[in-house]
Amino acid sequence: MKALLLVVVLVGCTPTPVRVVTPADLPAAPVFDPPSERRVVTDTSIEIYETIVFVGNTAEIAEASTPMLDAIARTMQGNPRITLMEIRGHSDWEEPDRVKRAELSILRAEQVVTALVARGVEAWRLTSYGASDSEPLSSSDPVVNRRIELRILQRDSD
Image 1: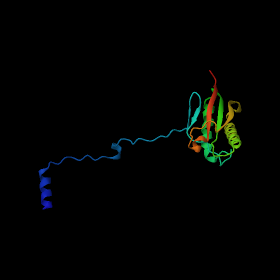
Image 2: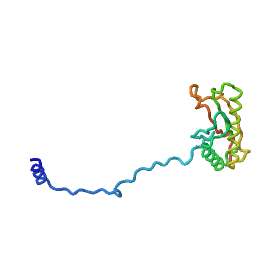
Image 3: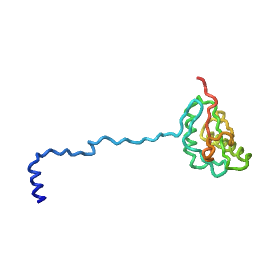
Image 4: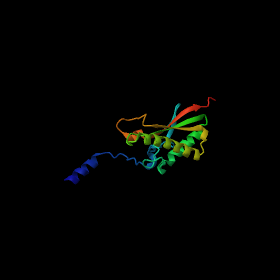
């Protein structure tokens, strides 16, 4: 019965041509192109979108931060009008000794300066500052407070 019904339906319909779609007929899929760099230069700073990571509770820069440091160095080299940039080291309250927090923030900032100079940035264009835990971004998340900031202190007015 179903076969007969099918035949009746097929006989009663006018055939319409079926368009075959090939991959060439389809529009190109959008391609996600992530930014090639991890920083943005503003009037007052170089905003970095990754954290510069240090090994444990030390001033030793972790290998994972190499691409970020390379990108910062390229930014400085590509922006010769930035004549003085301050590398600011920040710590958090998890280290109970306030003096150690201050020392660590200074040492980390100095290590970043050293790393940038090793990558070709002129030393006279860089200065370091240890802010310790005096400028927290969060009162509840200590990890957010551990950071390096890049503040532009002087630009060539040319």
